[in-house]
Image 1 (tube, rainbow, N blue to C red):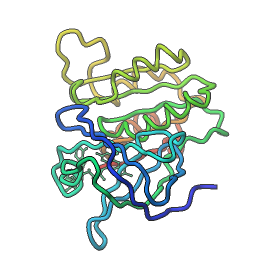
Image 2: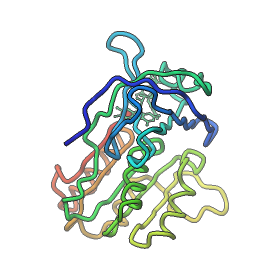
Image 3: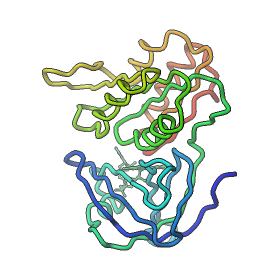
Length: 235
Ligand SMILES: Cc1cc2nc3c(=O)[nH]c(=O)nc-3n(C[C@H](O)[C@H](O)[C@H](O)COP(=O)(O)OP(=O)(O)OC[C@H]3O[C@@H](n4cnc5c(N)ncnc54)[C@H](O)[C@@H]3O)c2cc1C
């Protein structure tokens, strides 16, 4: 049964700057004291009537009393300004959990995750949740950024790949400096190169609409059914 959407109050416990424009915040639940959710879901932060911003939960459902959000604050609108202004001890309100971009364990297909920059957030929650509860099958992550500084969780996926061998990590950037050991190009190019067959595959794609469409087109050209590509469009 999916958790009910509830109105929540939480206190800002900590804020971390993961990259020049990427902030992570820990929120300790005050009301209700616990916040059950499924990995991949999001909360909505209100900014007046009919004005909200959605933020995916970066942490995993194991932690019910404290959740972590992560935002790219470069867009600079009300959501980014709210994130930038957060201070420890501040009480914030949000509603959730919402969203169906969740991993279906009963589905025997092998997952391919594709994330564009901050679109990694729900996938990070899903992947750590799978690691914490038993991945059980091979999974691949293709994580794209314009350069490595926009890939806030790049280092930890390297660790995850070493610790959980069925997990394959393919980082990809458009521009790299010396020493970059991943792929170069666009997310859809790497999907094309890295996926020889779509048989028994399900894709979870998250980020901007343009990237989602390109990745879906590549997979469908290989014979994948449209509905086997699940997506979360951030912008
Ligand atoms: C289901 C869902 C989950 C989301 N989860 C997250 C999350 O975990 N972290 C997060 O940072 N954002 C997330 N977003 C996006 C978030 O809701 C806001 O749109 C974002 O923070 C920008 O809000 P803003 O008010 O600062 O700028 P706005 O004034 O809303 O946006 C300014 C412009 O920037 C575009 N834009 C928004 N985000 C980006 C981006 N990252 N890169 C390029 N262009 C962008 C918008 O389409 C718009 O044209 C999510 C969106 C959805 C729908």
